Image 1 (cartoon, rainbow, N blue to C red):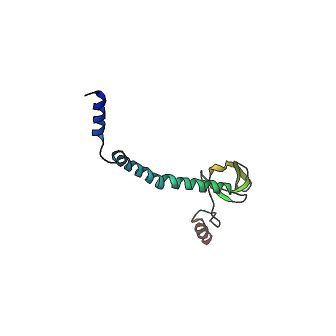
Image 2: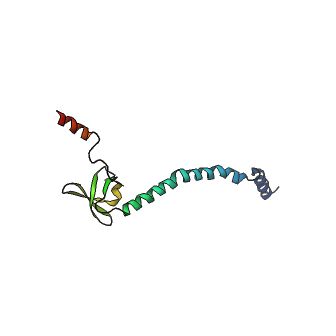
Image 3: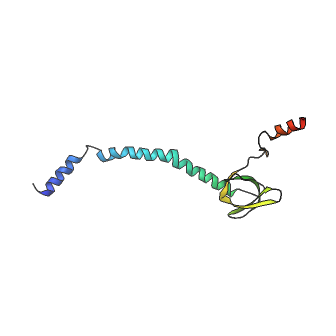
Length: 123
Protein backbone atom coordinates (compact mmCIF):
# COMPACT_ATOMS: atom_id res chain seq x y z
CA UNK A 1 0.00 0.00 0.00
CA UNK A 2 1.19 3.44 -0.81
CA UNK A 3 1.38 6.29 1.67
CA UNK A 4 -1.46 8.13 -0.09
CA UNK A 5 -3.86 5.19 0.18
CA UNK A 6 -2.98 4.73 3.88
CA UNK A 7 -3.74 8.43 4.48
CA UNK A 8 -7.11 8.19 2.71
CA UNK A 9 -8.07 5.05 4.68
CA UNK A 10 -7.10 6.71 7.97
CA UNK A 11 -9.13 9.79 7.06
CA UNK A 12 -12.21 7.72 6.26
CA UNK A 13 -11.88 5.73 9.49
CA UNK A 14 -11.57 8.95 11.52
CA UNK A 15 -15.00 10.25 10.51
CA UNK A 16 -17.39 10.11 13.45
CA UNK A 17 -20.28 9.30 11.21
CA UNK A 18 -22.78 11.69 9.67
CA UNK A 19 -22.48 15.22 11.01
CA UNK A 20 -19.38 14.40 13.02
CA UNK A 21 -17.81 17.85 12.78
CA UNK A 22 -21.10 19.76 12.96
CA UNK A 23 -22.35 17.60 15.82
CA UNK A 24 -19.20 18.39 17.77
CA UNK A 25 -19.54 22.13 17.13
CA UNK A 26 -23.19 22.37 18.22
CA UNK A 27 -22.44 22.72 21.97
CA UNK A 28 -19.95 25.52 21.30
CA UNK A 29 -22.41 27.41 19.12
CA UNK A 30 -25.07 26.98 21.80
CA UNK A 31 -22.73 28.31 24.52
CA UNK A 32 -21.81 31.33 22.38
CA UNK A 33 -25.50 32.04 21.77
CA UNK A 34 -26.28 31.86 25.49
CA UNK A 35 -23.41 34.23 26.32
CA UNK A 36 -24.62 36.68 23.69
CA UNK A 37 -28.20 36.83 24.94
CA UNK A 38 -27.41 36.77 28.67
CA UNK A 39 -24.30 38.96 28.85
CA UNK A 40 -23.26 40.82 25.73
CA UNK A 41 -26.63 42.09 24.47
CA UNK A 42 -27.84 43.52 27.82
CA UNK A 43 -24.48 45.22 28.35
CA UNK A 44 -24.68 46.84 24.90
CA UNK A 45 -28.23 48.05 25.65
CA UNK A 46 -27.13 49.52 28.97
CA UNK A 47 -24.20 51.32 27.31
CA UNK A 48 -26.53 52.73 24.65
CA UNK A 49 -28.98 53.98 27.32
CA UNK A 50 -26.13 55.60 29.29
CA UNK A 51 -24.82 57.33 26.17
CA UNK A 52 -28.26 58.75 25.36
CA UNK A 53 -28.66 59.91 28.99
CA UNK A 54 -25.32 61.75 28.79
CA UNK A 55 -26.36 63.42 25.54
CA UNK A 56 -29.61 64.63 27.15
CA UNK A 57 -27.99 66.32 30.18
CA UNK A 58 -28.97 69.98 30.52
CA UNK A 59 -28.24 72.88 32.84
CA UNK A 60 -30.19 72.52 36.09
CA UNK A 61 -30.32 68.69 36.07
CA UNK A 62 -29.19 67.01 39.27
CA UNK A 63 -26.74 64.16 38.71
CA UNK A 64 -24.78 61.58 40.65
CA UNK A 65 -21.17 60.90 39.60
CA UNK A 66 -19.36 57.57 39.68
CA UNK A 67 -17.52 58.85 42.76
CA UNK A 68 -20.77 59.52 44.60
CA UNK A 69 -20.77 63.30 44.25
CA UNK A 70 -24.27 64.75 43.93
CA UNK A 71 -24.66 68.13 42.30
CA UNK A 72 -26.64 70.35 39.99
CA UNK A 73 -25.33 71.01 36.49
CA UNK A 74 -24.20 74.64 36.23
CA UNK A 75 -22.74 74.50 32.70
CA UNK A 76 -22.46 71.92 29.92
CA UNK A 77 -19.62 71.61 27.40
CA UNK A 78 -18.92 68.94 24.80
CA UNK A 79 -16.98 66.59 27.09
CA UNK A 80 -17.16 68.35 30.46
CA UNK A 81 -19.73 69.52 32.99
CA UNK A 82 -19.52 72.10 35.73
CA UNK A 83 -21.37 70.84 38.81
CA UNK A 84 -22.49 73.04 41.64
CA UNK A 85 -22.14 70.81 44.71
CA UNK A 86 -22.93 73.54 47.27
CA UNK A 87 -23.75 77.24 47.13
CA UNK A 88 -20.97 78.89 45.08
CA UNK A 89 -18.89 75.66 45.07
CA UNK A 90 -18.38 74.36 41.53
CA UNK A 91 -16.31 71.50 40.18
CA UNK A 92 -15.45 70.43 36.65
CA UNK A 93 -15.98 66.79 35.74
CA UNK A 94 -16.01 64.71 32.58
CA UNK A 95 -19.43 63.83 31.19
CA UNK A 96 -18.41 60.18 31.22
CA UNK A 97 -18.08 60.38 35.04
CA UNK A 98 -21.84 60.89 35.43
CA UNK A 99 -23.47 57.71 36.64
CA UNK A 100 -27.12 58.74 36.64
CA UNK A 101 -29.56 61.59 36.80
CA UNK A 102 -31.00 62.37 40.24
CA UNK A 103 -34.69 61.52 40.45
CA UNK A 104 -36.97 64.55 40.79
CA UNK A 105 -38.42 64.96 44.27
CA UNK A 106 -35.76 62.81 45.93
CA UNK A 107 -34.90 63.78 49.47
CA UNK A 108 -31.90 66.11 49.70
CA UNK A 109 -31.16 65.08 53.28
CA UNK A 110 -30.04 61.60 54.36
CA UNK A 111 -32.74 59.25 55.60
CA UNK A 112 -33.55 59.83 59.24
CA UNK A 113 -32.21 63.41 59.35
CA UNK A 114 -35.70 64.90 59.69
CA UNK A 115 -36.55 62.50 62.49
CA UNK A 116 -33.43 63.56 64.40
CA UNK A 117 -34.37 67.23 63.95
CA UNK A 118 -37.86 66.58 65.35
CA UNK A 119 -36.42 64.79 68.39
CA UNK A 120 -33.98 67.64 69.03
CA UNK A 121 -36.77 70.24 68.75
CA UNK A 122 -38.86 68.32 71.27
CA UNK A 123 -36.15 68.53 73.95
